[in-house]
Image 1: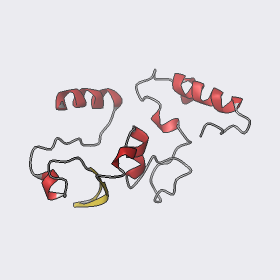
Image 2: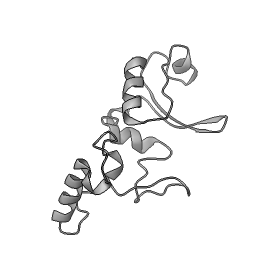
Image 3: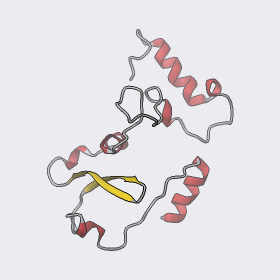
Image 4: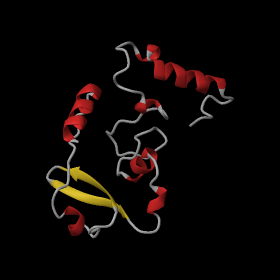
Length: 128
C-alpha cells in the first residue's frame, strides 16, 4: 500500500518516513508469526525500542489514541510532559486535518467546531 500512503502523505504534508516490513523484523523482536505492537524512537543513527506489548493487554490497542499514547513523544498536547523543544498544542487541536481550506486558524472548520464546543462547556475545557 505504499503508493496509497505516499498519496495521503503528500496531501497532508507529512514528512515522516513510513516503512513496509518484508523480512525477519518480527522474529528479531520476539513476535515471530504472532501479533505484537512495538514503538520506537530514532535519535540520529540510533533507534530505541521504547514499548512492546503482545498477548494479554494487547486488546487495549483498539484505536489511534492508544497507539499515540505508547510513543515516546505521545500526542504532544500541553497536558503531557514532553521534552523541551518539542511542539505542544492545545488538547485536540493538533489533529485537525491539515488539508482544510488554507485560511487563518480561527476560520478552519474543525477548529471552529472544537472551540465552539469548548466555549459551550462550563470550564472551557470539559471535552479534553
